[in-house]
Length: 198
Ligand code: HEM
Image (cartoon, rainbow, N blue to C red; front, side):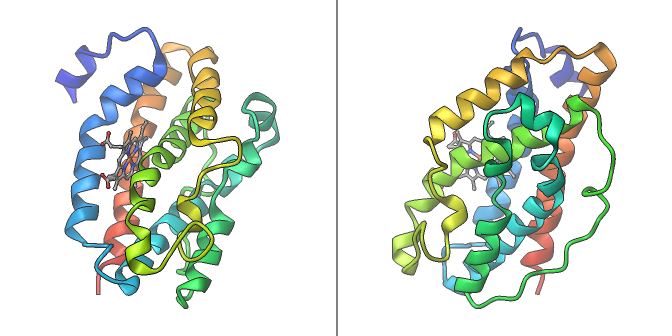
């Protein structure tokens, strides 16, 4: 962490968050691959369940009115409903979410960092979607949450990053944002391990 922090010199916050989460992202990517989510529908459903739990954590942030005034189309960016429908398509029950992140109050820097991780995961989703035909799934059945967001993936990311980079944060909020981006990756990892546990 110390070494990573000293190299956080990029003027753009989005780039600094990219830098700091590079390693957690690769670790998560490896864990996903080790769980072999594309081996069968049953295994893929476990990955969807982890995505559901992560979106459940974030539902209130996506619904926040103040943030909604800052980030274009914020409420429509949440994928909780798509993950619910995907689990129904896959004939799996909804896992029971817990409230520890959902009801934690966060400052704007932390909130943006959690959303950075969730919004960023839509970029990787394009690659995952390509694996779906082999399972007979698509962005309209079983893998809706991986689908192209309204207005396009690139545009959605660009408009989110523009806000992320423009918001003014003091040094403490900046520090909290960086810690929150890492915490969000850890949180997803907890969900992933839980959903693939048995
Ligand atoms: C919970 C959060 C995330 C999850 C579960 C996730 C998962 C994944 C997975 C499994 C892949 C590999 C896809 C493949 O090669 O078949 C991937 C690739 C990718 N992810 Fe993520 N990701 C997350 C967050 C992010 C964030 C925050 C960003 C950017 C800010 C991002 C950007 C990308 C990009 C650009 C790729 C394409 C290939 C690459 O450059 O590695 N992801 N992601």
